[in-house]
Image 1 (cartoon, rainbow, N blue to C red):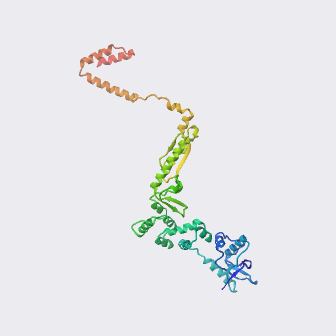
Image 2 (cartoon, rainbow, N blue to C red):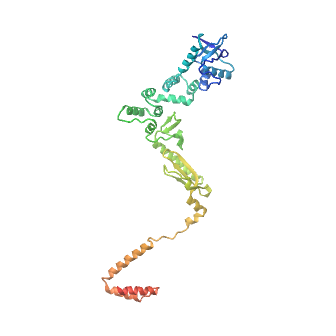
Image 3 (cartoon, rainbow, N blue to C red):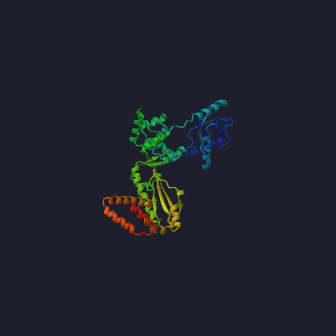
Length: 386
């Protein structure tokens, strides 16, 4: 097979090409690398019966990428081609099929090995992304595998560890990775995987940096990045809550300085129910309710009053609040009657030991006229019986 560089105007797509079609192929994934480095893999071509012209058996997408680049620049470079010998159509079909079936994307560990070499040779993340037609974040994700212990990388390559578990392990320290490997090696222990591994790494609390009210740049603690999930987390939950509570207190003071009548801070995990409140502006006494979830999210609900407070405000509740209320008795009416009966019984029991005093009380009661004459007769009769 002969190798040669052939100009674009002398190439066309063979009808025997496995991916032959009227519609142009999607070249968005390979165009950046072709733009940065040109076509590196030779196209497979064969003579098409005309002098110095060839048809493409395999390499259609590379050909269209080169044409697109030529349109951008106004000129195109000759493409590297492997020229097949004259033969039957079966040979061309087999060559096209083999070339397409042989394309196997490398695993992430192999990509990491290649990207790491490029970084050591001075390539930056944007350079690598432009060369291979991928995003900067994709390159960072692949390079994050370098934070893993070699045993974990090899186990991932052998598919003994799933992708989600590996992505969470990229956020683990070397000590945590060693502890996790020890759990895997011990048949009597359980090694957490997937989402459970994430909880294990953060001690049950995975607090995202997105919920912080304070400036992340001024945070003194450790922050771990989840490149695969495009997020980062606070490694020290206690330090986060210290800084977050300070920021919440500052937010509360800001609301009060802005003229809000009151700022209510609910207990962590307690929900704010709008259906139990009415929207009330600041000028009419509306309050601010601050909620805090167990995961660190802070919600500020401005201008609300409970239904009772809103009704009181509409009815001039301020006077109602300041009006003096009559004191309530310590005992209810039935309870007071019960106590009086016990007192009377105690006095009667005491009078049994003093008959002279009892006689004088009966006479005094008999000659005393109460407000109601009927009651006086009744009381006198009862006294005479005793």
